[in-house]
Length: 193
Image (cartoon, rainbow, N blue to C red; front, side, top):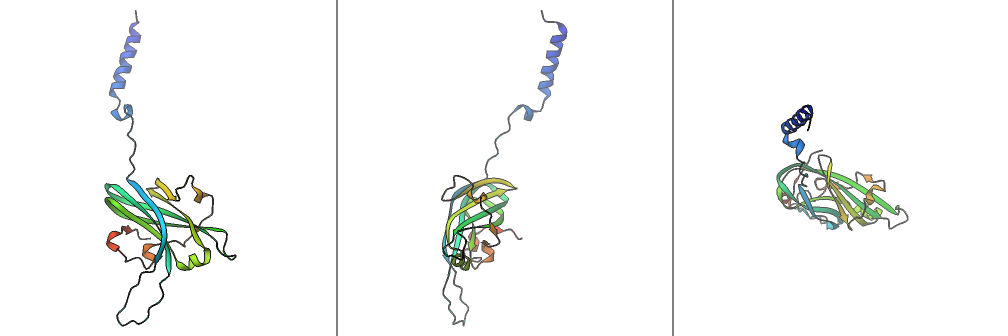
C-alpha cells in the first residue's frame, strides 16, 4: 500500500506539470532558412557603353570582374540581407603578391519573395591588371548577423577565406560602378551606407 503523503506528492506533481505552458513541453520547430542559393559565379563584364548626344569620343571598353550569387527567397518580404563576397586572385607578375584576397560587403533591403534574385560585386579592370586573375570566389549571406548560407566557386569544402587576411575596400557594389543603371528594375535596393 502506498502512503497517502506519496500519493498527494504524485498528484501535486501531475497537476503542476499540467499547468506548465505548452511551449515548455513541446519541442521548438527548427527555424527555416528564408533563402536558398542557386549558384555563385564570376566572370568578365565589359564596361557598359553610355552615349551622350554630340559626343564623338568612343573609348575602348575594359573588362571588369563581376562576382554574383543567384538566390530564391521564400518569405513575403525580407527586411535585410547582408552579403560578404571573397575573391581570391593569383598574382601574375613579380610586382604582385602570389595571392591576394579581396573582401567586400553589401546589404540589400526590402527583398520580396521570388526566384532568381541576384547580388553582385565588381573588381575594377585596374585591379585585375595589377594583381592577376581570379582563382576562386565565395560568398556568405547573413540575416540579422545569423549566417544563412556559405558557398563559392569552386564549391568550398572549408572556409578557405578565413585563412588569408583580406583586403577591404577594393570590391565595389553595383552602385559604385558603371553597372549601377544596367537592368536597374531587376535589382534589389542596396542599403545606403
